[in-house]
Amino acid sequence: MQSVDWDAIVTALAGVEVITDATQVAKLSQDYHTFSPVLVPLLSGKTGDLVARPATEEQVIQVAKTCVKYKVPLTVRGAGTGNYGQCVPLHGGVILDTTRLNAIRWVKPGLACVQAGVKLAALDKQAREIGWEMRMAPSTYRTATIGGFIGGGSGGIGSITYGQLRDRGNLHALRVITMEDEPRVIELRGDDVHKVNHAWGVNGIITELEIPLGPAYPWAELIVAFNDFMAAAKFGQALGDADGLIKKLICICASPIPSYFAAFKNQIPEDRPCALLMIAESCLEPLQGLISQYGGSICYQKSAQEASKGTSLAEFTWNHTTLHARNVDPSLTYLQTLFPNDKDLKLVEHMYHHFRDEVMMHLEFIRVNGAAIPAALQLVRYTTEERLNEIMRYHEDQGAFIANPHTYIIEDGGRKHMDPQQVQFKEMVDPYGLMNPGKMKTLVKSKAQ
Ligand code: FAD
Image 1 (cartoon, rainbow, N blue to C red):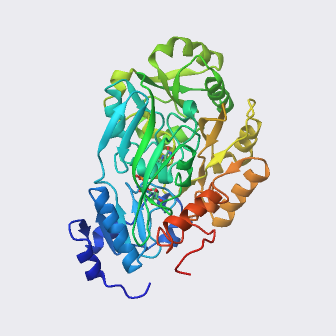
Image 2: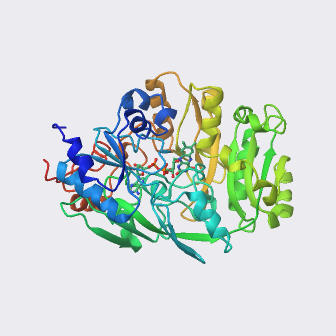
Image 3: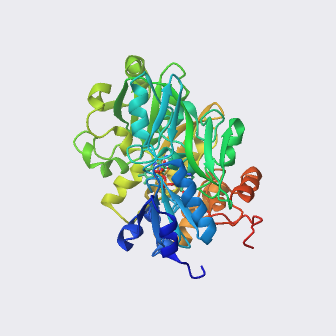
């Protein structure tokens, strides 16, 4: 970057909360890429120059306009819980922290309108007051923002019923601020929302969203222990396919993963694979039949009322499984895999036996095009980057889809290539290429080139 007059920038940001303290700025430049031993050295020491915390859309426009005027990079940040260095600024500049944009505009049956910095748990709480809830949430729902979930997430607890964020109907509308000389507010509705969905903040600053809701159930939380991993996995598939059983979460952990859950040390029998479940309370009785069919036994159960106090089981699933395991053994890392639609789970079984303890199986069932399919965030005993790549290649060669979590380049992760619609939109809304530069490798026409 050419020399930048930061004093002039701070003056131009008058009225907006600005943080210039180097320690604070460095802290607000981080995310959870630390789960990846490959990303840590690549992103070490990358920080912004200052953090701006706009409290209104007008202030967001003021920040955007200032960055364009002085040609400094702008990286949008929600809660910074992303896993791929998504909001780590590679080339310094301004970090736009959205957490003060935290108004819930309205909640009505089936739909809510919120500002981007609203925490997922806050929306869920308010929606539940009228009998609705978020359709899906990452296991970081207590801290993550809705803008960050749309900008960087994919799905989570609830995805067994509603699919993923990219599925039509899971995001209704967005308001986006452009990075043009005169920033504009653009409203995207219907299929146009995908111009910005999961774009890692490279093509517009989301300020407001309309998010669909699902009916809220009292969710019971259960852990079911099994005698062998494939019985647990096949139980997960059968529950995913059971149309009459209302569920929010089907997480299957091979042994020794449950031993990393200190909170359940006294409940989960040693060396046993288990299923972590969220099931509508009204479905507990018919669920028992399915559990018996696969030889499982319930070793932990909380009613919805009991589960509403303290830590939810959900915070042991998805990438929280990795977090708990890394608390015990920080050398562990993980994969992100989507297995093919096969009710016999042959490829899951093959990988389970092929890699044994080196790649510990952790499945999360999700709905993909109407079918329940195991996604996986397997835990890996990391040795070298070469071996990690070899493991991922082996999965791909055998027909599994890998969304590589060890890269900070969008296209090299789950995407593989940028949606041409998004590239075109980026050319329009970010003509100087200032938004989160370095994260997208597809070349775009830029006035700066
Ligand atoms: P940030 O990390 O702050 O941002 C994510 C990306 O979105 C960045 O590229 C940022 O620039 C962009 N962005 C943020 N706000 C905006 C905005 N207003 N406009 C434009 N772009 C924006 N993810 C899942 O999908 N499912 C999971 O179950 C899940 N579990 C996790 C568990 C753990 C323990 C951890 C550490 C992470 C997990 N994640 C998961 C990843 C992450 O927590 C979620 O995707 C979360 O929703 C990100 O929200 P955030 O506010 O922290 O976003």
